[in-house]
Length: 378
Image (cartoon, rainbow, N blue to C red; front, side, top):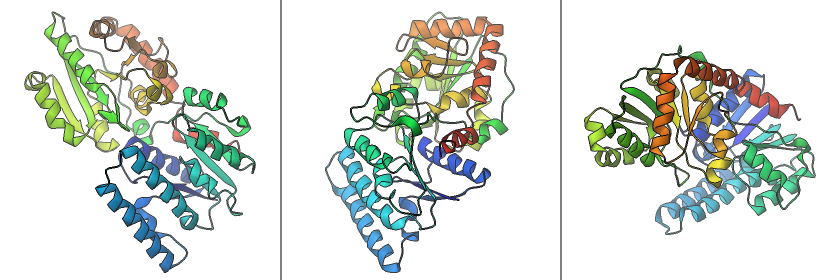
């Protein structure tokens, strides 16, 4: 069977969504499926005729010009390009496709009636808007649709939505851990009482939302300026290139004293060689609807690397971990963070027990298991 993943945004990319697409398709190949990814980067390679390819390329280029010159806000531009990409999908998806996989219900709606498409998988990463719920409802009548929410929160909101969906073919499908992390597992490491190295993997902003990393750095600075018995070295990986100089300038004292190290986004293969030197990992995100709906992929990646994990005490993180597995602290409270770090360092046996429990949980979150879970509802 042939599975086509249709993305309405750029691919390939080292961003989380790109990593998810890559490993999802890799898992399908391992299970015996033939996979194909169609995205704006290869639109011109598909289409039923040379004329159609030229027409599609012309209109896509026009939208790119609009994107660069328009004063419309980013959200409006995204909606415009989303609609155009979905319209393209009508002509770009090969007639040999058996399963259509996407994150956009509109792409599914415009293609699910094609006789050769047996199933449509729609991953739901955020609470759907009313119109997207309507698209899902319309597709459900065919019996072809599989809805795959990525978090407990998103699944609950789907079930409580104004448009009542049939959840017979809804399957909770949290993000999984890339194979590279399992292949390159680092042996557990004893924590040190000085120069404690905490690592964070991610960006400053996610789809426009401030992930409060500046707040984290400020808290670390307060801890290091206090009379604490330990000094923290914070390593940030995956930071936007254009923001690195500003962060180093704002926190120049930490940078000059070798307490702050910032790295841009990089491949998993390179990243793993650096993460194994960490004493602990941190998930510092605030609460709020956006963060509540997400499933932070790095949470389980941290767990596979067998290091203690510090997490802000939020709904999203409580949906993943328990107190038996990680160290919770109050977001924005540097005293609470200090206490969590101190307890982690002073209780090595407890820290080891927690990281092993977190590792045991993470072992179940492979891409093979995730894909199998979705395919089981076919």
